[in-house]
Image 1: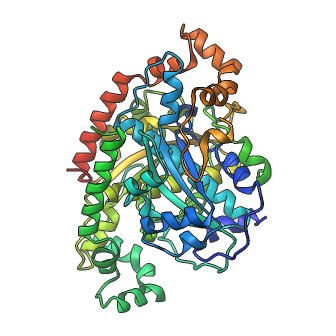
Image 2: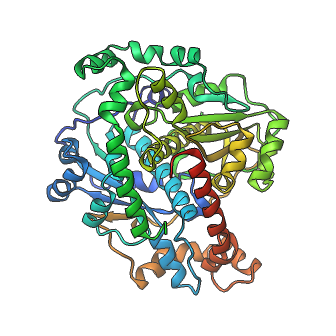
Amino acid sequence: MTEIKDYFPNRRTIRRYSDSPLPPGLLERLLLEASHAPTTGNMQLYSVIVSSTAEEKRRLAPFHFSQPQVESAAAVLTFCADFNRFSRWCEQRQASPCYDNLQSFMAATLDTIAFAQQFNTLAELEGLGVCWLGTTTYNAAEIAGELSLPRLTVPLITLTVGYPAEEGSDVGRLPLDAIMHNGRYTDYSDTDIDRLYKEKEERSDSRQFVAENSKQTLAQVFTDIRYPRANNELFSDKFLGFLRSTGFIH
Amino acid sequence: MTEIKDYFPNRRTIRRYSDSPLPPGLLERLLLEASHAPTTGNMQLYSVIVSSTAEEKRRLAPFHFSQPQVESAAAVLTFCADFNRFSRWCEQRQASPCYDNLQSFMAATLDTIAFAQQFNTLAELEGLGVCWLGTTTYNAAEIAGELSLPRLTVPLITLTVGYPAEEGSDVGRLPLDAIMHNGRYTDYSDTDIDRLYKEKEERSDSRQFVAENSKQTLAQVFTDIRYPRANNELFSDKFLGFLRSTGFIH
């Protein structure tokens, strides 16, 4: 097991995995331990779908734009906000469930991501490599169809998991005063922005991104290539439509 | 430092704190380490506001319905989805930010909760006690006003932090097969629901909740008392209005 003091500041995303299978029962133990993460009113408003056969992974891959780690991972875990199970329990206990609304979606989202992050930490401490696929909310309807998700259930994040076949890169993080405010939010001056983003912009991988994409600044790589307006708006419309179909938004 | 193998399956919420202050620099170190949690495209779409003076905590308390842990904690941390900082950087780098949409809010929400959960784990491993306040999204507009949050910034979860003055209770969790599905979601039969919620319903604290509230079932405590429809709908309308005011939803 990784030494805890070395782990947290050095954790890395792993996208390439060896062919080693996971020991039987390992995912189950890690998920059960992760379920002790904080939840809203101890309702545990989440489910996780484990896809581990070649066929199950192959069918999910296109919804993640065929990123190779979906099929090469030992397991693909789709973490879903879930008010279906809780509502089913209410109905069976002479109680009227009332969770078809935005606050309930937010509560379930918080529970789900805290659970996913706790699983991520446990898996990495166990020596596994993990990659988060933010594409999950882009194609939530398609993923929900493939995984037979019922009403009031929304796929939010997918984690690919396996034994690492790479070391992963240290991608760096902003300095602490970029993300922490004392007492109240102090908006950033031009000088602050220059200072806080300097190290990130000067990294060799950042310079390479700018050059490869023929852009003038690193920020343009994000706005024009990685997360452009047309995509953000297209996938926002799709996700809003899906949220309506789940019953969480009217 | 807590032994890691004992920590995860036994973690507990702590609502009562001693008067001991936090050592200088501790929160800063834990937040910096927590910032290595996974993020969307390494954008780190979050900010955390640290309220540690008596006056700062007193002013936040009513937005959390005056739960006593807000004023008794050594520090109150409000974790916010934040696309303001990233957008400011874009504007200053000849790039057009395009993050006033639902997908960007979801990406920032995922980043924020993973960061908050990683901080929670680090703080608890350090011997601190933590309580999550889900009231944050109920009164997001009021909290945003108090903390001077700018556009594209949304308070999502508040953590109260201090040295424990109680052991905390083991509140139990559902069995693993309640939350894990293999290959696809298998909806719950009546028999499944009875089996999966049996242990929870038979706990003495659950029975006490039912008796104290003069209800027939534990589920009715949730639907009628703790999270009733009128509150869920009122706070959903408030939160939707606030999201519109931030620019994330139109």
